[in-house]
Length: 416
Ligand code: TRP
Image (cartoon, rainbow, N blue to C red):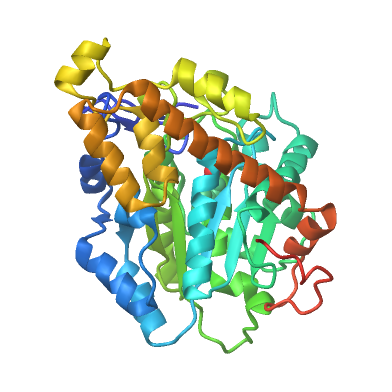
């Protein structure tokens, strides 16, 4: 399906299905924020996060990787007033081959959970993957991918006592007991016209009616009452505010959700938007599991990582050593440098590399060597943690039991 709004006047395309940029510096995010009507995260807001939590903002925030928001102030106010809120995020499980870019939202969500000590719900949209590609995908396969992807998600360090992972197909087939899910999806669907989903997502008359309905299901977890028994709410409890960290391509779903929230007596969910993780070939495209040479997979060996970065990572360095020494490298388009911004936590080290590479002192081969080591370490650590996530642990994360879960046999499951 090709969304109607594909092919903007400025050349960038950002929809839940397609992301491409015209410039080699990537998507023009300032323009996108204007077009979507969200707000940039300012340094004042970063200071407020720090003063309300006592924790230094995650480097994704301070480096502008998580860069835009809707109503974050109201979530901070809730936290400052010592009232509860929860975090909702998700993933479309299209295969078992997850890449390093897929980890980012979960690394960030774990940080939110630790910093705000809040419950997290994670929706796996296996239904979406099946509905949107029924020729290639089967229901059974999508459900299996959801289970396998959960292992990678859990390995990011979520708190087993305070995190629910659920798949939509699991809910719909009553394997997961969220009895208010479908009625709430219907209530949302009733308030959403065909015209609206066509305008927002570019659906056409050729698309199946099931696909037209899917956005309602992605909205449901933003309404706290669906998790009533998980969050310990009774019939009279007021809905709990929701914060959704997501890639900015998911914003269209939540614009619809926000429009409907008040009609259903819920607060509008707040949003935190992140930028796209670039492909090895450069910032014009995002890393994609279906384009093998664009991606570093979570199953890659150290040798594969080294080869991929050496062979494919787009360089902003000079063509020859002489030219590089004379003109310096361009960090804004250099993929090895961009990956360090994501994965090297030490701000001073990143700044020193930026300076040295831009001046031409540090060579492309030297920068790639640093990036290779950082990414190898990240992936190896991930593989080590993932190996500890047994089927039983996955099932416990997927069980609809009130928070904080007391009966987990694996409460000793430590995420070191
Ligand atoms: N549709 C998203 C995807 O394909 C998955 C998703 C569902 C999601 N709910 C979400 C992502 C909430 C972010 C936040 O990846």
